[in-house]
Length: 523
Image (cartoon, rainbow, N blue to C red; front, side, top):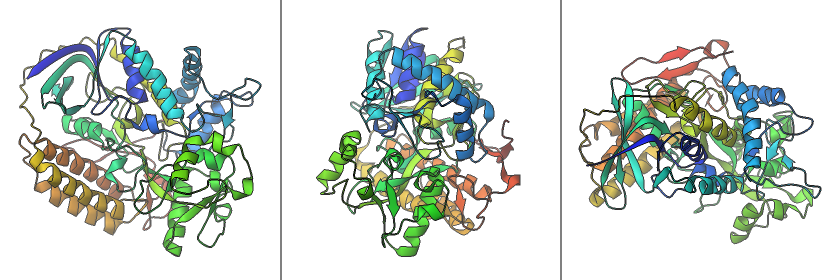
């Protein structure tokens, strides 16, 4: 097996991974590992924008308060404070390096409004292509640094941990089946989310939670795995992907209508269509259950001819489906979108394993609480993508590795078996661990997933079987945490416990081989 040594190992090439690699290159050599192409990530597909209290009438304290409200008081205050204050500085630095956000005719930044925000503070780039523009900008900056070596189509198989010190990662190259061990002083996981565990998802196919599974298997602590954010407005057409219709569309005044043409959000929340995502997604789900039909997004009343330019990507996509964004009703339904919980870290992105860091969607810094405030995700990438390096660069670990890893093999003959199992699991998760859950359904889901896991308890050297273990581990973690939280809070809605309960205001912590623990919110 080939062994490569770097000062820093960054796994994942979304915005958080690119930022971590960019900053780490100032202090040493960097391996940037991606299981697909470098520009395939949730960050790249982000439409909404990036939130920052940059307007004249805004202040980080207002952004802080909005984040706590959206997070249903489960946010750790120190993490949120860092997010909104340092986030403003990071955005200004990014602009200083040449990143161009949309401006009005007078040269001022155009600031949009999204659900849960009390001020216009959403910056966009090229309209609804903010993630693409930011990721592409950072990718150019990363590729210009000679100390960074990219490795595409390279899948992380196992974290190499000895004496609770992470010394690197064992990987498999998709292109030729070669196994490569990367050894380094610090390993930074920026592997993104896991929403492709569900059938309807806005995420690319790569978002299957590998980083969370590997961290769990290595003994890292995880937090709040029950909180999956479902985006309220994803296109819902039979045979079509759940294409995201940005929250910014509602920010410009779009209405949600049921199958009878009735606008239903004003009677549910004072902010109507601009309520936090968990409220809107649950309301849509309930209305769909009652009517047996999709709901619809309508822009007809706006009569704004500038919207096709503002949302050019969405407009063009809908046109290919013979939907006129300005005049037709757009059929939508919620889809799995964002992992709110993840690998538990401190405010520097340090996990419970020495020399193992996490940032971006894979991490649980405590900033998101029970429900992520819209457009805070790209901001978290900027803030914690830099903070992980500020701590990791001081590490001088003993990277002498004593264990020897077994080669993992690509076996085409088990590809279909993997897909069949993945679809079976997606059915279980979508039906029983979706937007609205209950104890009976969750216990059934756990029983089914554990039954599947038993069949693959000895995966041997087959990569497809290892992927199944990852899937079943993650789904069990989500389901167990959902069973444990006997209340409805944020993105976790239980029909048998329909209200928030003060005694349940804590983080749910899981670690391999240990009982579930509870951790107080840092206030």
